[in-house]
Amino acid sequence: MLRAPQPSRVFAMVSLPSRRVLSWALYDWGNSAFATVVMAGFFPIFFRDFWSSGEASPAITLRLGLANGLASLSIVLLAPVLGSIADVAGVRKRFLAAFAFLGIAATALLPLVREGMWAPAAVLYFLATVGFMGANVFYDALLLPVAGRARLDRVSALGYALGYLGGGLLFALCVIVTLYPQGFGLPDASAAVRLSFWMVAGWWLVFSVPLLLWVTEPPVAQRPQGWGRAVLAGFGQLARTFHEVRRLRHVGLFLLAYWLYIDGVDTIVRMAVDYGRALGFDAQGLIVALLVTQFVGFPAALAFGHLGEHAGARTGIFVALAAYCLITAWAVRLDSVWEFYALAVAVGLVQGGIQALSRSYYARMIPPDRTAEFFGFYNMLGKFAAVAGPVVVGLVGAWSGSARVGIASVGVFFVLGGLLLWRLPDPEAQR
Image (cartoon, rainbow, N blue to C red):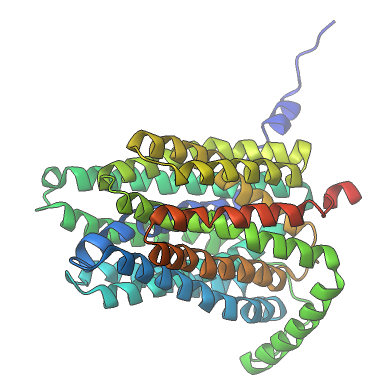
């Protein structure tokens, strides 16, 4: 005779996230507005059409690539050292807050830059991007303490999924305001874009609060007294980590593979709109395509989290890499707006998945009491890839005189990263 399931078992099967997990994931909901509205959406268009009005197209692409690249280089230099200090002093949340507030403040200042003043706009964008990426170092470092080893794939995917949804919702609102500025009491689309930058700063600030209130750091066994000793202890631990990364061959090999393939992922995110504008596509159509990516990315990231739990994170990463190779090949031959929409859907299906599973795959390899330090290396290499990618696309495009040749260079990184990843086992299978 069949029995009805007991309520406790029903709730166990639903497996709702705890307040701690949800508070951690909501930070992604908040800061993803910068990645979508500013970094991928309005800034490249406004930088080209407003702040660099009348400039040659290759020069604009190169300046945008350099701004992104220099911001990433700053994180390359800072992340490992600050990660080590955060671990020994137990100040991950403090560093996260400091970088987040830097990004929020710089974003809020962008609307004050006047037309034709591309240099101040680039400087503020550089500072905002440093704040965004720097905070992510310590956000990632809190994944293992928040999720525990058993739920890494699912919780990591939840963060990216909420990031797509939250960033997409604000992006949709900003697009509506930009398309119909008079309906919101604004004189024109330019004023609407400025308002969008302020909305991003407010959104990012509000949804940072739950993490700061309800996510706790693991206790530090022996906290150094004073910042001077903490810095010295951090440098000492950093030296030991360099030695350990060299000794732990699988960690070093994965970091190299990740550095290569995440280069392509970040470059496509940052340069897609500029590439579409260089091909002559309408700015409004490109913005709508980015919206499609966001809302497709929400369920796709959750699906990749389940794929990682059942088939392994490594398998899920390979699925995404194969898709990115096809996307790059198609982008080189792109000649209509509907194809750009189709590619936006394809990117949305795999972008969050490869990011979430890479983070959870790596978290299984590293010592649980040194997450900020090891994620400092992780983000260092990821951001160093972002130094190379946009700059390579800009330089190759300028050298060849073709944006298509520039975007084709991205595919090499996916192939090389996949070949290195092939040599690595699944850490959970080994366990």
